[in-house]
Length: 393
Image (cartoon, rainbow, N blue to C red; front, top):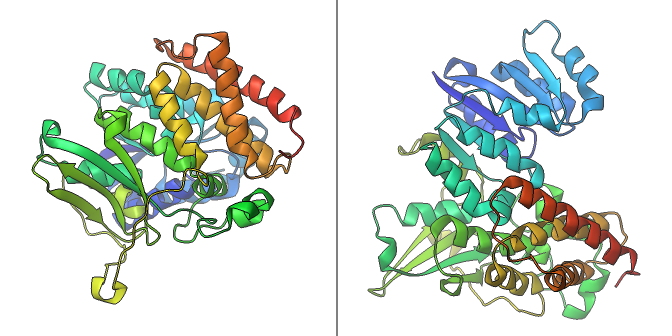
């Protein structure tokens, strides 16, 4: 039986992973090593009772008594705290889902690679903040990283059997988010509730807001560079409202290979779970005749400044990705707390990058996770100062 761990089991990625694991036999097919969650004790306990992991871990230490009570009599070990989440990754697993959102997902993902198995990577921050380190760690342990973002899974599939030297361009698509058709002058007044509704995908609140601001796509542009080793000037973004063509790879002979599929994360997760085979997946089949047409347009730089910032981050290199992510997370927290407006988020991130650039060291190569964490803390501190100076800018 293949040993499997799921980090971030109760989030949108984790729930889709749980669905696929149970459909493919659950604990009768897989030996579940660890399930972890942030604060959703009830759902973590429900999943644990179905999948019967060796250990269930809740990140919020105050919730450990609740988790223990919910799993009384099951024989499932329990633990709590960020350190316990990372330690759960030390338990050998042949396949691990990295589904924790944010910088908190770095440590479990890195430690899971030490077993030489497969890391299904949905945590964007791992590549954005520490891409070279992550890829080096995988190579050191002969581990495999399979992308779980729909766009990068699509690129990975389109490149199967192809030579990267023949690739001219990689195109990833974006729905445009909740505000793609709003007048620009109205964006500043957009509410948290309005930003939290995605037109196509069913995702968590934070990633849905990031989709509306295009910070999500900005992160994916950086991920594309790190995962596939392609020059930033050969990566492009297209707004594709239907969210059915997830990526295109253009080759030097003028041909293009694209990947189409319903907007359902179970496709990318299922591909990573069953790779190199293709298993039957419970996702909708596209009826192109019924769909009739697919549309594309270039993203508006004024509407989506996050894309410009991503390219500046790639040009700076080094620790700039860590600073970018930390500032983005801090700005998002402030928007959700109604401390700044929607359009102010990009302004906060840009100001943080400018201040750190002026201090020097932003482009210094990261040689350890400690350096990544140090930059993360510095960027969050400066972001706090910028937000404190901001009166709903």
